Length: 293
Image 1 (tube, rainbow, N blue to C red):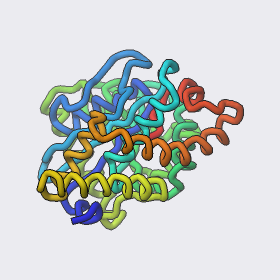
Image 2: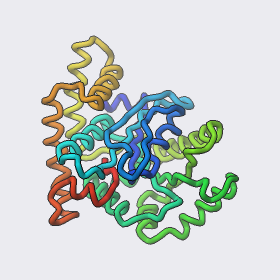
Image 3: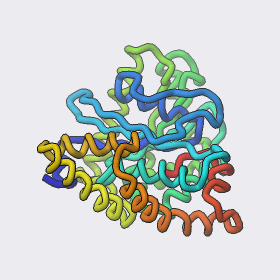
Image 4: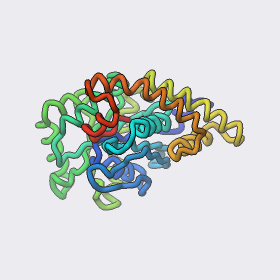
């Protein structure tokens, strides 16, 4: 079995967004449990890659919660490692990227810059796999009708930069209330998963790929095959075990050395162009407060 064949068995979802946008809470809504740690405060959210599996409504979901990189005390190597982990556990590429925004806060230039960075890193093709999710729709009212109307009006009157992102995403968006009751969150999860499946269908079932993903995938493939041989387990089991080992850093040190080379060679040149004199990744991180996968 190969990475490509594993596509028949799972839907890979990557969560992205500004620190405090509700990425981890959305992950829990999708999973139907508290799979992801939820922290409070602008710079105390997800600072490490998280991932989880579940079988949900007849689908095998693999969700990756990407780290916010706003902590200025973190070294460039630490930030690159977490970005690399996010790429590795989403191998061979995500079917869906959920860009999480707050509908009760204004869309910032920093969020747009993080989105522009994403396109520079992976190309415009990533837009075909993107779905915008607006958290906090309860700010529009308590009823579902009020929330739907409020979100629709908010999208129609969105600022120019957000309109550009919506256009790139082919107008795909939805809203969630991650603080709602369990039953209502189940309802919202069903609606979101239906939109995810619709987007996957539009893409003819294909996941996103790029040169960077291909390099990371090749690196992951070697270690997965070794795990299969050492433990005598099927490819799917070896892949899931390896992803967990990557997140918890239980793989051999050489794995991360090569991963850092792959990610650094792709990421740093792009960021140097975007932030000009800010050569350090941590300097870019401090200005965006966003995950960049």
